Amino acid sequence: MKKCALFVTTGFVVLTICCITFAEPFAKGPYLGQTPPGSTARIFAPGLISDRRPHTWEAWGTFSADGNTFCFNGPPGGICVTENTEQGWTAPKRIMTIPPSSACCCLSPDAKSVYFVYSYDPAKRFSLHRCTRTSEGWSLPHEMGPPFSTSRVFGGFSFSADNSMYFWGLAGSDEERDFSVFPFVDNTWLQAVDFLVDPGGRLNGRHPGIAPDKSFMVFYSIKPGTQGGTPTDLYLTLRRPEGTWTKPRNMGPRINSRYHEWGASISPDKKFLFFTRATGWGLDSNSDSADIYWVELKEYLPESYR
Image (tube, rainbow, N blue to C red; front, side, top):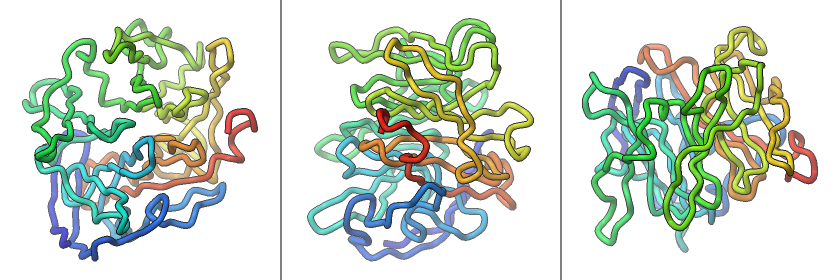
């Protein structure tokens, strides 16, 4: 399978794709046959998913609940999926019905839908879209209507195992809003419920990566002066039994760096955190690059949360 160069620019992201030739299947075993990382973040599947060459861009990686489908933004210039078969993992294939300038992709737990952010009219807001898997392939995307009519979807989102969707906060003043959840009940999403993880702290968090059982969450903050002076760092908060959240804590130098960390997702077994590390926001194709990283969560979580 050959992947060819493509440069895609939006107001937020530049995707730069270089030619790579893969045999198919190109990997075998859980997590694409990769040796699990320790407590220091490492690039995920270098040469298979993450292209280490300058000015390439892979981001927003998520696994399905059974661990047999992986979805990410990247080569060949859009949203790609690889699946674990009896013969091994298939080479990543772009979902051709999804526009190449889409961002913030997220795979549903059952791997039957891919959600992403896109604007068909650059003058209008970005909105949430979905493609569904059919017997003939992936459907054309359609815009998600109420209750998802919001301009805040570009802050990123994720799913819990019960298909509830977690977003950057949608309602209230900045002082009263951290994040929101759309509960999934009787096969439909209910209106968003706002919740606080940093009352009065003003971390200004984005892109909540929720654990499958909703027991903890990782998000990024763009608050100035975060660790090492980086524009963004990842933070962890735990959900208490009564439903409140612990004070978010910076995940430290083994995960955060002098670059941008964002786009957190939690593996279906809760063992690993996946995230994007980038040199910038993708606005400059001559300098910005991004790769997907992963790290073992054992040392970052109390035993009862693992």
